[in-house]
Image (cartoon, rainbow, N blue to C red; front, side, top):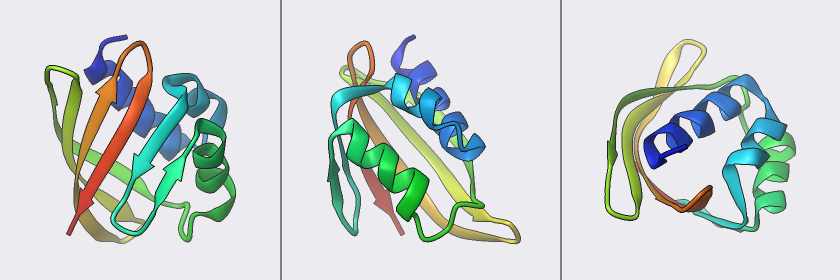
Length: 106
């Protein structure tokens, strides 16, 4: 998969609650840097997404994904069932899998 495909697979897996598919697109040493915390390691991240997220009934609506030199940049909005929670920009660093993700949110 190229970096754009990896980004789409990442959002699809999270929104579907498919944690095996999520695990498959992440490198073992994956790191996610978010405004509120940093999650280091694929298993820590998958565990957080499965067990510790404050809200799991969300959907990512991705407006654009652009391929860059070392990965992809995605812009979109996170929706709860009846409202927009926030806009985000995700910067993906990829190789064969997603190595690092930095999220910017308003």
